[in-house]
Image (cartoon, rainbow, N blue to C red):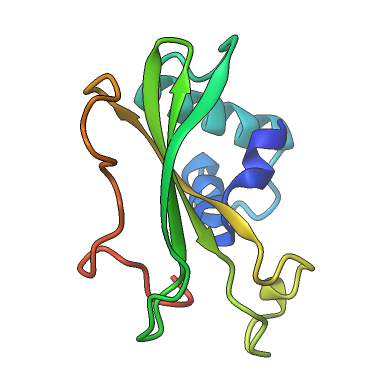
Length: 139
């Protein structure tokens, strides 16, 4: 499933951890990881998997949050007749500490979260980062 690769490094690690049957399990079958992503999206974002149309309705970003925080960008997307908030974070640059962070996608934008926006698209963009919920670099 290509969807898994659209998530940020931190989210991919979290999804993989949740898919493990045991903390000692180091090699995960791709099918189990993909099933975990599908289950997560079916549960928290009904209607997203298998949709027939999508349109970005609005976006709001904070590309320079300062204070060691990751840049974020939020999008309200109309998917069929539902609205979702997609929040993306920009990957940090490789700082030399963890070789897993040098994957060729440094400073690229990836999905941090997807949430159903139940108001039907009539309210202001919700889920937009505020100073209290921004992510520290390396999260």
